[in-house]
Image 1 (cartoon, rainbow, N blue to C red):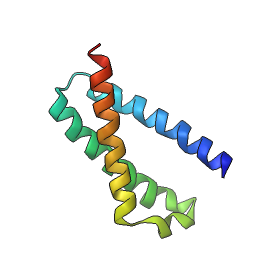
Image 2 (tube, rainbow, N blue to C red):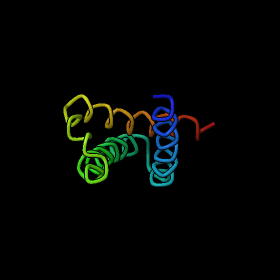
Image 3 (cartoon, one colour):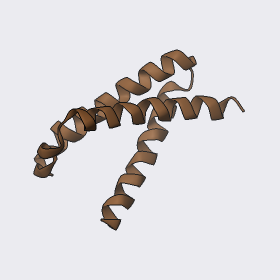
Length: 86
């Protein structure tokens, strides 16, 4: 569990850095929308693409996981925009 948490943390940081690169020129409203779409895209890639390598991901395809990915994208975009204004 510790290793899985570390991998997930590292991936989240990497995904947030990629998102910040994509939204750095957008206004806050458009950044939040893009962040939500980015999170949805991550869900699709993770739960439908990586299922070839990790078949147990099929069991986690639900609305809670979709919501968590979208919230990640929106919150990462919001935090980036707030901190980048300083």
